[in-house]
Image (cartoon, rainbow, N blue to C red):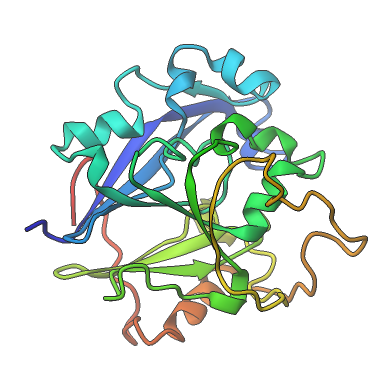
Length: 287
């Protein structure tokens, strides 16, 4: 019987300039960003969170990503794709039950459609936006990553079905956390020994020694639609490419970053009053 464990892994890095990450800082200094992803092992089937960079960029970065390589250059070994790393840990890719996505940005979609029996769990708002993003966000989405035929997708609909407990035992709970992207979601993982760990994806990041929020809001008003399971592919009519004049989502409420996100998670009742058990994890090590 498989233990419930959390593995932190890395699918290469992105090389860029400091000002690409910290606006107007760095004076052209080089900067390199690690690209992590996570594996949760579970008796009912495993979960990959994001998957990092697509394996194609290991051999042909510009051919796969295009002009965005002028800004972000991926560094990835040929044997460091998410599938190969899951195999290297001794797990069968066919035993992966879920692939869950925070945003659908190019450094998060390396596992989309790569595991034969896995269902993709993604926010409907994120999936829709990825097909028709604003001009300033278009470079971050690689359509070849997520526009795949025959891939099973479970859509989540923002606050209408937030705190989705994927296994039904509290091991993995989704937390809708838009701001970095319209359908960004974070994940609360509860481990038998280490306790709860909140994986925020790109919702928050360190800046100058301080935690700076990338959340502009945490409470979109959203039409209460029940989640649907579907087959992926942009040509089958599931992707609504039309957006209203008021924008892709309505009613943004002010957020206060990590503090607000933590309060949001605490409402689930899964978070102890003394906070999260956050631990440092080395690549390939489990908690």
